[in-house]
Image (cartoon, rainbow, N blue to C red; front, side, top):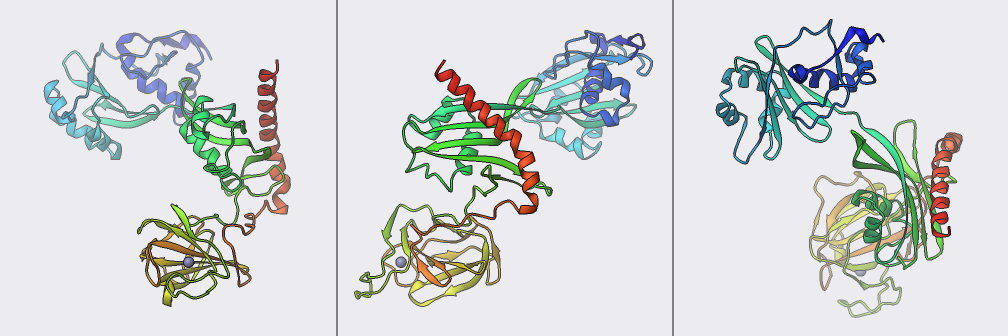
Length: 436
Ligand SMILES: [Zn+2]
């Protein structure tokens, strides 16, 4: 690139540049190649009275006619203000206001400006509005730029850079507190708990000196972390049992977590279908029935919970029964493949829209706790059958979800090997820090 064909911008025409330059940064396809290169060259200006910081920016002198000096004003939007009142206060044309909000679909977003944020108003020497800029959030900025008698409105999005980070921590009090202490976001801690949820009961089985290592994505804008992305790999050591998970995305873009051997971290079933306060009656084949007062096998588990507590299907499946069933009251039975079925009884009501034949997903709400049928209080009676035989839902060995298909195993290994290497590096690094 020949730098002589460019000149550094002056503050006076800086406003026009905000759009031009940042546009060039994020949208190379739509802009001419000259602008794309500009970010790499020449010391330049500090972007103007806006928090869109363009550290380096220049413009093609041959392409842009020099704009007259623009006056720029930053207005902090206060409660009760809207674009119309601001235009009145700043003595701007109502016609321009209409033209901006009706420019295109994006124009309407100017009508939804929020208190506490800044509106940057650039006017020419006649006081005529030339550009309006509103920073929606860390990434998106809305601009309206005059083009003769109308305005062009567009959203400028900053590029998001993904950086890989890792953290290692030892449990002292709780996953949440120790995770925070180790610098993890709430989001990453939740992701971590969800990945290992089938193997580790974080409420009951976490112990002091349990350990975890997590490799995850940090999302950066302007070199500043603004959010966290996905966990890429993680290890959790719970009561001396080590569990390792790695993220894999298939050709259709579906991501899930697997062991390094390609076994799913998910189980085909959740252990419990409801958030319960206690087990009010366990699985017992010789139980005396509390209402009938005679020996009658209790072929399920009773989970006491408040009326209206949501009940989830514990696995993917198809509803094969939906209705009343004697002492069971309102019941749903879900069939899961050939081998398994689950039953949910005493519901106060069903989730709307479900019927016999409906497909349900693991965790999907199918109804609500109640005491319909023969029941002494609100609870969920839950049964788990394997090949038609009742098994204890609390202790039955739950099958894993589908592992990686054999045909995908090579792709899986190739994609996940570097992610596991990163995890091992993070583990080695923290061990080194502990035993220097
Ligand atoms: Zn029961």
